[in-house]
Length: 396
Ligand SMILES: NC(=O)CC[C@H](N)C(=O)O
Image (cartoon, rainbow, N blue to C red):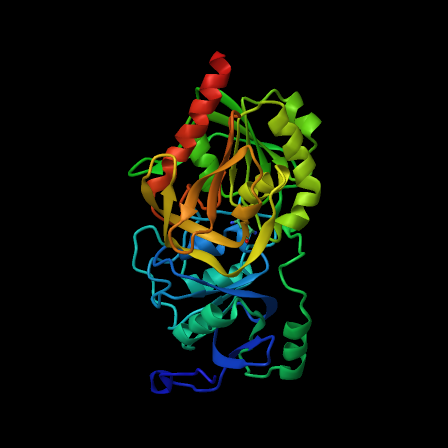
């Protein structure tokens, strides 16, 4: 595949960026964002909006994202839409692959052009390739490991890039949580953004929630705060004893990057103690996968993963279908769910597990991103479900 298309649209045809796949395939394009090179797994994301939230989602650590939507950049970037909480951490995605050059911003909230923003965050970008062909390749062969490089002078060490792409071990077996988790505890009371008001503050909290940070996103914290929670965010390796000593009304298990089976080695024993204490517990994405592991289920690597803002999920407890935001390359294998853990949600794209609940316990989790940011808001009800469980427990 040589996928430098629309050559006449480009004033200078020298490729200034390359994407080299582990099988040796070389895609030539035009560089954007930061110069340099990065290795990761290539996934495609089908969201039509929300590139800033996607690029700052810590769950994308170790990944290079190709957007299937061609107009990226049109709302610019701003400081309010960043999802990373731990600003000192390595950003999420290390590379971005686009069909067209970045569209100039045209939005009242934009404070910076996407190209400048990518540069400032050290994210390497490439445009001008046929992203449909790349997406088709991922759909047929699975998510490839690759090296992305951007050099304005067009000079690349192709041999070295091929070797690095081939030798990168891949996300399976990789724990990336240490790269993104916060180093210390902090509290959170910011509530969701509202038109003409901006973000609010939770001044009269009803619940005290401990959120374990495996790579948590800001909008999760805002939605929890909006439901009446005062949240203490704790590092991923915090012990169950320390968490329970804070007498939380609820514990939240966050999203995060990498292989759940690897991260689970230190997280699962903590989660097991938390859920056996009877504390209401809610998990999202990596948090969901690790709750699955904690009850004895297994996780597996998916073929092409789910990344987008248009994924239909059925809530089997109500029969309702919701359109969801997703970002995962691993999944809980529903065939391994033990007695006592019931599947509550299922993907209508491929039938994979999208949620569980523990029988007779105030514990549940979903594979997708109910906080949206980006994405549809259909699933916000889950934050209310968590609040209801905490309320019931407090009353009991
Ligand atoms: N968004 C997430 O939490 C992702 C979970 C996990 N790293 C996966 O890829 O499946």
